[in-house]
Length: 120
Image 1 (cartoon, rainbow, N blue to C red):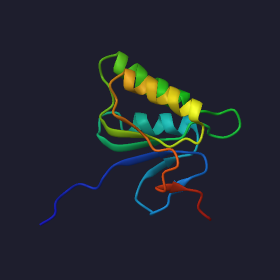
Image 2: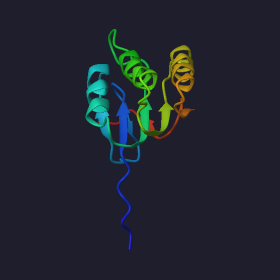
Image 3: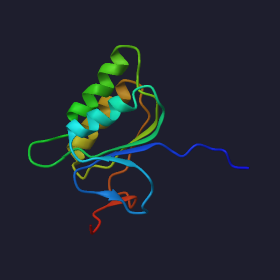
Image 4: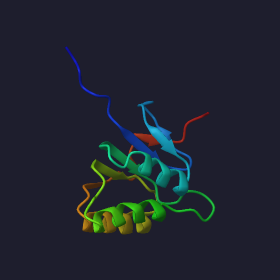
């Protein structure tokens, strides 16, 4: 009998999706990413996938700031692992540093085959 809960995965990326079609909630902007985090505030996220550059002048920093503020307030989000999959090495490095500073488990996943540009 398999009564395990489905994994709760959030992807914040303006263009890419999961190549294997795994079930995930997707946000295409920082504002949508913040809204998704807030919607899951008191739930466990198994994985959070973050891209740095989100199109035009939008970046992931509003999402990172929500995570930082929650940790600063003593109520960090319950996230199994945060995957930083940005192709922007400088931005990715700053994201990892900021999130690890607040105790989040972060993995650099730049170049990961898990996310890619899919034909719609």
